[in-house]
Length: 263
Image 1 (cartoon, one colour):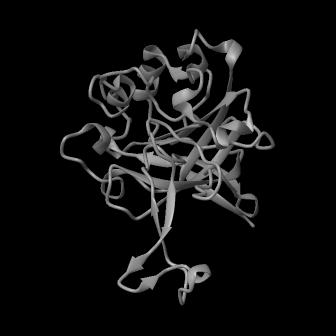
Image 2 (tube, helix red, strand yellow):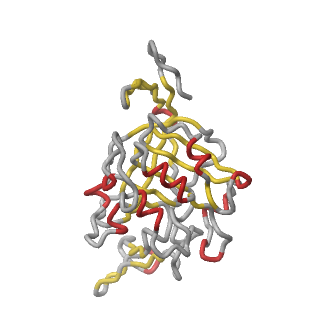
């Protein structure tokens, strides 16, 4: 099923029959990624009086209590409340309207140490997009179960690259790494810049408080770089970070007189 959608003054054909999820399934009984956490996701039968929520243990039905940290385990979306003492919630601040997304892959050899460079971001062609997803290469499936606290340093955006993004018209930033900042960052400088704490808001840019960061996505190799329609699906939990399921659909610009087609 295809639809024509106007976004930011341009027309796009979106193929809704080819949707793909960028979320990593959070399996309490299996492997899953973790970051900044000493414990794994846990699932235990609900116990209340003589009731036990496990049919294998004689319960009348299955009802489990799952314990995890949205920030630490699996795909999640954060809002400005992550770095604001007022502790705003994702569902109350983030612009949840679907928008155009640009997917780009960043190879290790293009990094400056562990930093994704300004030049890489400037070449991403996000002028007409509301979202950017970054896939880091090599794209090993170990990301699905990586213990990042014990793993080598993951790529992060350089301050110069972050400034470009902070001053762009982007609303959503999606990463296949566990954090927008390096683990040793004390002030979460990249988070702060993205949410307008230490960067100017340029004309046409969204209000920083409406922005989101989605971390620990996974983009399979068979999804090519390019344009997609993003539906950022958020768990209805009142918190500064919530589990999320970003869905993307292939999109292609439709030619109009005087416009160039963007692929």
